[in-house]
Image (cartoon, helix red, strand yellow):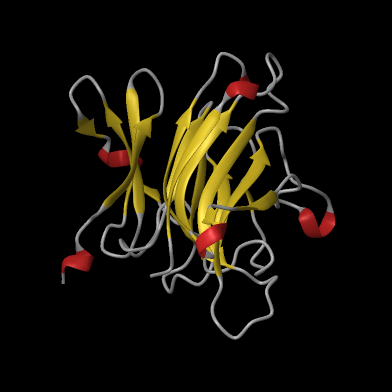
Length: 213
């Protein structure tokens, strides 16, 4: 019964006068703008929250707004079987990941971060997503969950033909946290904190990991 409440999963500054908020809205996710001066909802501007907010309040989710565009990592359907990293709002076309296990495989999204790597144009600016997922590269009977980081370029507008409205800059890598002497691997990512540096190269990420048990 409590799952049918409206769980606010996203709340960030949109501009100098408004916040942007998304909630599960009883498994019908919706987003809206909140006016800062009176902290009131813009009732006319309720938007479909599909791809911006999960349907299920227990599902992992992360997102951030960069220059008026929302980058979100969530689940795109009611069943929670279509994980997606998606960009919408703003002037660009919506761009998202493919529904392939090699891109995302049962992920639990944890955090996201923006790293401005290019002054002026912003073409090389990156958005990073941190999550755990079931690995497809291991041939074993036991379920193998690993921690990941993925990134996309802010200037990515998608590709041609089969890559229309799909990320062309999407890359991901495994994050390794272990105690080799104890043969203990901490594969499940719990939280991430981003510490910006004076230069983008000095940006540091701090992660909290746990073992399977």
